[in-house]
Length: 220
Image (cartoon, helix red, strand yellow):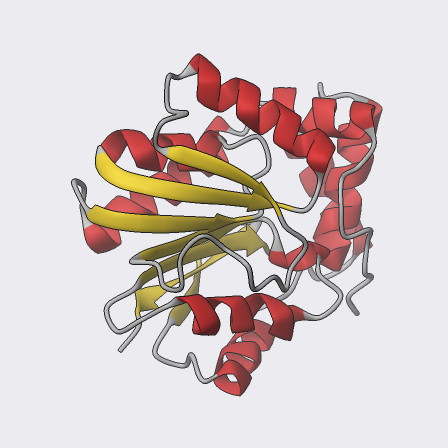
């Protein structure tokens, strides 16, 4: 099945609300567990989370790395409102700084990050090279990278099955967004090609669930 691009930003209030209030615990736990498996806990330095959404994952990363600070970036101001609430509720506002930034952006608070993470952003982007170039531009030797995103299914029937399996009780707007996101997602062979083009072949891509791939590794 060919990729079908979708809107780059979640800018509608109800759309952002449905996403922020959805139960993504399984996927978020998969991300954080994969991070810990690769790099452990208790890291130091400064992290960059691209496409932070409601900030669930970056909050989890901040908790397991209490000596780190994070810049949490998203292009949707509506979504960042949910991120700010979440960060404040978990008393992490002194270590997670929220930034409204449409990728590619080149005015982040620091020039290099020791950790760069992202979950479910790449499939929104019209130009995937802009995403990977952000990692190139803001990394340094030793930067730890974890990126997870949806895996495009073989056909629309499989996409519909996944929507029914994982969002059966969700609001219609979330079910529709999930379906569109599956169709807009990339497959591991496409990610391999993107990494090679960006000079990031040191990073490894693997399937980690029936609907997710994950890229991880350390910049050389």
